[in-house]
Length: 378
Ligand code: GLY
Image 1 (cartoon, rainbow, N blue to C red):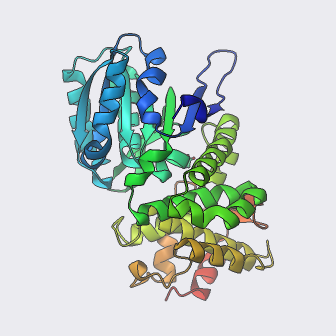
Image 2: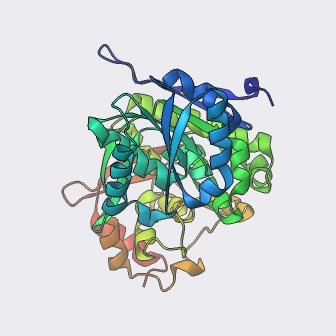
């Protein structure tokens, strides 16, 4: 498979003082070209790979082989898989190992993994020697279409998710469509929740395409997967280029997340509900809340719910993993932990319709509580 089969999207981040723009490559068997694509970013022929034990089993040898074709030496740090690795303890262990490998200020870290590894190792890169470069090879759909792009890095605190972190943009992102073959069905479907998000935010034509091709994508069609990853990355690159630090429109990328994160918190970030499932249910709730507030007539909610059902994603509060459900007040309290809350007031991403989302600040808590009470929250 030639490299020409791959597509390139640029995240434009340049101003008069600096240019931190970078490319996202999306394509087939891209890991075989990783050495060739990473090499121009190296000051010396050396990189440290950070990955987790699950990903290492499937993909580490391929990455090492690709680096060696370009005579790039590497060390590998293999960490435990799972959200628990986004902790201060694992960050400290990672930083110490990176220092022990004798890395220099100009070295580049290569992150091979899903959202957890990207967030953790990206944050380590942001603080190691006051900041070193890193490249991302995202291995889940969720990471390919969302977390590896845009420079949000960080770890969790006992007080909440992603509360310790930094904006630190990668130098390069390599989204290999074939790597997705090693994901479980559940994680493929959950990653799809983040793809659908881009359509619901501002791209009705993409929603139409997903309605026609989404089930093919889930079933493993590589062209459909590549098209959806490219469209999602284009959409994210466009938003991040305009609002890197989330002062405005980048908040749109949180469609469904205020409800979704609260549900994830209720289920203690366990396998009862994984992130993309929470986002799927959260997006339906966001459309329903928009209708409750009079921003849309509710006519499209069943279309979205049917699409989620066709994909095999949960679309309402009957999802088993959520039970027992929190009360409306408990749900509201969980939602108030959201990072978009300002001076105790909620911010929601609402929608006038499919592809017509907008940011709404200062949403009255009583209205939110009334809406929650009108759903199945006790
Ligand atoms: N995942 C949301 C963002 O990158 O802003």
